[in-house]
Amino acid sequence: MFKKSVEAKSQQRLSGADRKKLKRTIKERFPNASDSDLDTLIPPKVEITVSKHPNRVLIYSLEGGLPMFFDVDSRGTSIFPTVFALWKVPHLLPAFILKGGEVSRYVIGGADLMFPGISIDSEGLPEFLSGEPWVVKVPGNPAPIAVGSTCMSSSEALKAGLRGKALKINHHYRDALWESAEGRYVPNAGFLEDVVFEDPSTQQCDLSHADAANHNSDGDNGELEAGMDGPDASYPDSSSKMQENPNIAQQVTTDLGDLTVTENVQSDKGIVEDQNPLSVEDIDALLDKCLLQVFYTTLKDKDLPIAGSTLWANHILPCRPPGTVLDIKKSSHKKLSKWLQSKSSEGLISSKEDKHKKEVMVLAVNRKHPGYTSFKPEKPQVEKNEQTVDLAKEVDINRMEVVEIYKPSVHVNPIFTSVGADTRQLYSASEASEVVFAYVEKENLVRPTNKSIVVLDAILCDALFKGAIKKGSTYPSEIHKKDLAPTFINRMQAHHQVTRGKESVVRKGGLKPLQIMTERRQGNKKVTKLSGMESFLIDAEPLASELQKKFACSTSVTELPGKKGHEVLVQGGVIDVLARYLVEQYGIPKKYIEVLDKTARK
Image (cartoon, rainbow, N blue to C red; front, side, top):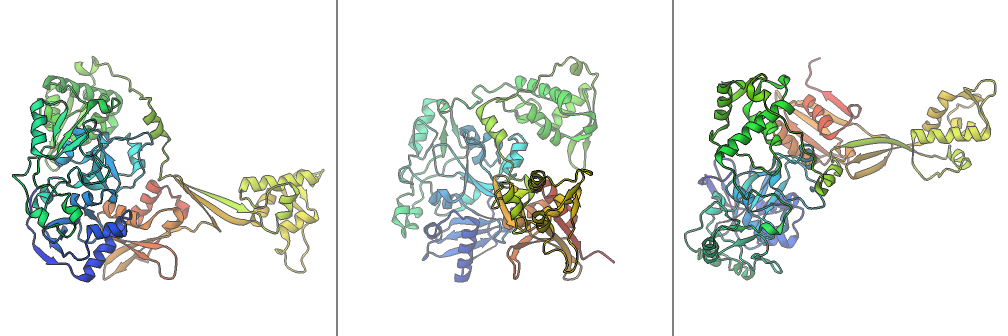
């Protein structure tokens, strides 16, 4: 986002009311921030300025030009802290820990974070939703180096086999936003108490020119530069601008160097690193092998035609050998389109260039080609390690289950007491049926001449019909077996249990359906309202952010007047696709979704 320096269109001082609003927004978006953290990020007596940029980004800076927060859409719904704010409050956001220096080099270079580059501990992948703000850290260093938003939820990541893009990087150390700060600095070793930033036994951040020069003179030894040049000299203004807080002033280093990540290979023997880079010929051979493996295993003729980018992301990369890095730029072809065109020239595939999408489309596969017929595909390897087992047992947070349960009422309590069942527990419909039939069997109430008829004694008759029969009417003396269980269950108190992932809740009464309504506003503009999502254990704010990205439209959340719960407002008539999305993504049964289109013509 900040790859190129962009001059601000306008800059103004933040008023007192806007300052309080910004503080509330930060508190709501970052619940980990305490009041003292907020005072650290937005000091009470320090002037705050907001600058507007041509790409609609708002940047909030402290007096002296130190940016602390930036708003992507200028509406307050996608506000992120800068690395300067994260260095002051490292626990502000949850963090992904990188596997090693090789990954950090790409992140600092501006690339998005992929799942294979994330280090996952024995507890498994943490739970998160799509669109949540997360930061990136290097092992052994609490100072974040980048911040962004998640590209998919943890459940989607597990379904995808932990492949694909994990975090879209919005801002990172040494990008244009960092370089534009007048008071920019790098935290030194004393930045946090009881934290050692420079540990020779782990991955570390060297913050001086001398240390970097010493490391470089000794040779590589796994040391990887961050991919950016260091600043020209020191920044004397940084200390003067931080005089208000002497503790922070001590944290500012005036002689800065490159942010160097030193990688100790022995620190984690379980991680497969690319110690011996492949030659160009080896990469070309590996590309051909992966392509043929795809043709034999995952890509069928019914999937054709297919875009080259889709073929690469969904088929070729998942088929590469474990622990290997497949980079088309390091091959002799340099580009994916040229590689596919070379395969087309060999006669292995038929392809053509889509001028509209500006990429190569694979039209057909020649399965009689000598290269295809002579290739022997490998069986997919199943990795049986503790991490895979833990990930397989990870609960899908989007999987929802609704169970109708019942509690014994005063009418049926004698039946439960007679068979020794607890009247304080909740029972499913089948369990309640077993109780009443156990009573029938115990009292021998089945008619001998007709086994489908149950003769009612006084206790069972009162349990089924007392209070339900009009005065003056005669109580029935028998009931058919097929009507016994439904009548008995109707006399109990209805409850429902909703379970989503590890969270479960039991409520009285039946489950109220989720309501989706589309109506017109301001002429011919359509808006779609969604309410009742709390009954299905769905938070309104994350859902609104998710729908905003899904449908590329603005969303808002308001409290329902006079009721508990919230209402999500989506711009546009998306009633059908929204209902389908809730069924597919959140597992809500169709019978629990009410749809009302007020814009439909009569």
